[in-house]
Length: 327
Image 1 (tube, helix red, strand yellow):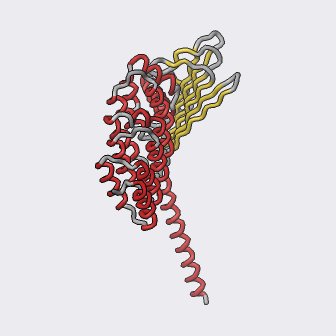
Image 2 (cartoon, helix red, strand yellow):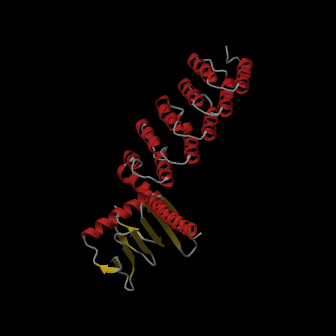
Image 3 (tube, one colour):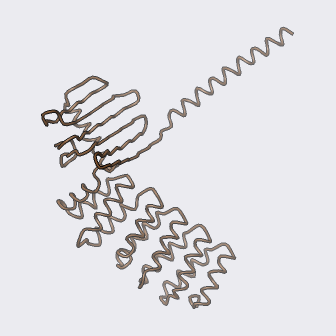
């Protein structure tokens, strides 16, 4: 009896140690997993405004807040002026690393009061601190969208459309890309290469919905010129959602006078839709156009053959036979 109890006790200890060891391993593995989050918030009232960008990545947390009116230097490396009750606050925390704080506000005499702290201790903003400040502010501009529209307008005004198109290669947030692209599209006399490059960069946004919205907004510009058609459908190809891709293609089919190159590219894009229903829905609208271009008809026939569902293929073939697109 005693031996049996001792055995059970020893077994319980062993199992408990194993569980604790396993839990420690699981915790260590979980702690190695990193999650990147970025969020921008803007609040405005008649008396006050506050813009805040927060970003966490690999044990690092950044917060940049701008309260009321703050005028930055042209390169956004620091504050140039605070007209009234504005304020800039930056917090940069690193797990097991350096903790930095930077604050700029207007003093009683109208002067700028800067406070810089490293691990809680106040310091002068030396060369290392200025380089840190420059990097953080550039992140806030390109990823958080700090003064996105005014900055895009200034780049366009001072350096031209090509410079703004180039800046689109550096910005990362969906919101920032959309703002910069909208401002670029408002620029007069854009050449086709600039437009194509800009769309390629702008369409790298992560949201299928936002990408679809962007493509719907610019289809009149891009589908009217054969040289811009490839860039447009390259962007369509980045849409992974069958529903959003179908939405973009159906909208494009509403355009009057859609050229042969655009129709061929559109049918090819439809053929790469995974859902038979969504694919058939687009191809039915193509069939109703009864295209006469032999290239379009050939692409259409190939696309119909990619439909695996007999029912959905039959829906398309029925409309095609009625309209004459199958001939």
